[in-house]
Image 1 (cartoon, rainbow, N blue to C red):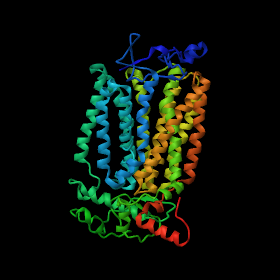
Image 2 (image 1 turned 60 degrees about the horizontal axis):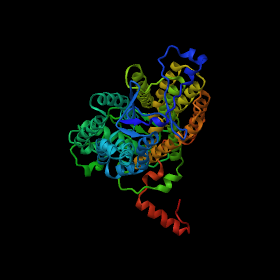
Image 3 (image 1 turned 90 degrees about the horizontal axis):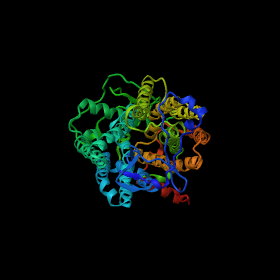
Image 4 (image 1 turned 90 degrees about the vertical axis):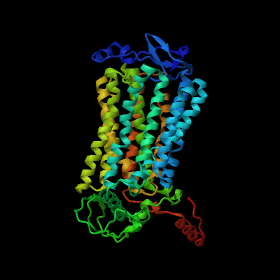
Length: 543
């Protein structure tokens, strides 16, 4: 472990404890004195639980690093994580998620196992290792969206995001207590060895059980394959390049009107006959108007991996900017919820919820559990509304996105004026996470509404933009609270997030689209044709 540098430690008592009038309001809660450390530059930081430990008043640790060094090492991961978002999504579009995600997780496991060795060598070695780890891990989330496009009909994608992608909320709450137990029994290096071993075990299962296409899976049943392919094809038929302003999900009748051979090989997947207006057993996406698109052509639009990325068209696309702006606003507010409300509770209210045992351990896990439950509830309810044609796709996206963004904004207003009321703050924190879970069927699901072929690239752009704001939030919060750990200054932090939430969400609500964009079917031939037409007209086809 890292020993906290004791040369520049100043004891700072939480305002609600040091002020007798405020202290009377919080007598029912277990309090800590909120010991923080202030470096010579005046920056107030906290030693991470896995990097510093105290026992009977003595600082323990193997590595004697000051607070600045600790901050550099901890932040190194995010420099790499931000850089590979777009690359990871694009690689999955071209080469498949099986290889890309498998390599990312395996590299993360190797990095974890090597962490104790690098830390003991020099903090520079650990800094470099964590940058490399971030580079691989940054590609992991965007590369899942191309897999979702190929395996899940549109009706099930929101639930996939809620149940699978949002499982990281559960893993966070499970990993921290687990690491605490491992460290207590075998020492801090064992925590990295155990998590690295889990990564290797996961990779073993992933490579043996995972396939990029449903047709490639050796044990998939004919019924399941039919369900998946028909659901995806119906969606492609209904939105294949056509400007559909309003779409609804319709639950079809159980009537098969086409032949399907489950034993066909992958090369013949797209050659079976199909009537665009037929009914199937899948929950399909049916247009509210008649269409005569050929199913083979529509289906190929979803599965083509060789298209060049139309960067200029994407950059000019207003629906893409709606997603990006919404992601940035959500990331800004969520960073405050995730990182700074616990700090506020410790430094101002005198209550720590970041310890991994007892009552405090339960409190630290509760917000993430609430977010996961909120995601599952929102995705389930939203898809039921779509199945029964209660709401259109675009209306569903707007309603649940508004809940995910406006809900936390209102909760921050409550925190700002709650005073020394820890219970109120904890309840509001959990509610904010719960409301934000609705983003699964709102903002997150909208990525695949506007693009199939470039869903990984688009997800990388959105995630990269959202993570970039993570570099800004600490600077803004630090400027407002540096040497001013008072309730008034923290109130400014929370109030600052409210207009960010509202303005970014309003932009998303105004400009979102539920239509596959024309640039999604862009390829090299289209690009050459556009350039030739531009040259004939005496114009240069540039951004």
